[in-house]
Length: 154
Image (cartoon, rainbow, N blue to C red; front, side):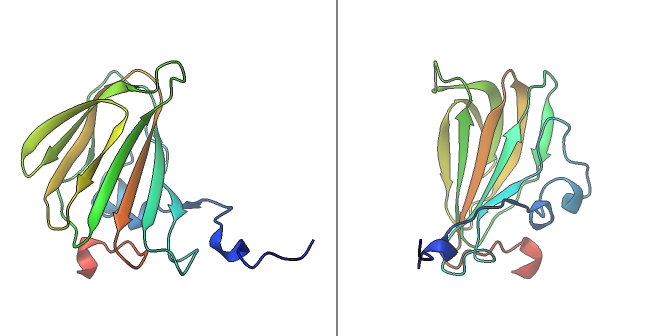
């Protein structure tokens, strides 16, 4: 079979991108919460130069303890945060209660879904009041160039 002219568009090996996440875990001066997997880069310009978005994914595991995760911050680009439950019998049920502040207003998330954060909007803290079943968290930075730019590089 001839090599595909599109193979360079695939990411076939996920990369630990923990060092990119300046507002959470070790880069923010705290350990990664025990109920979180490391963040994995799903798509970024470092891997696919044509990429216009930076996408990460983490697994969030069960805990009955309130868990703080991400500090308040803002970006110079739009961002989408997605929360996806793991119950195939009820895909709407997140199996958790997540809190997320937007411009200081607290929101509780208990269903699978997503939230659009416009550029320049202060958001977080982000954390969990409880997690009954594992769920997947995705962050999509719509930076236009596929690179994550931490606050220190603005």
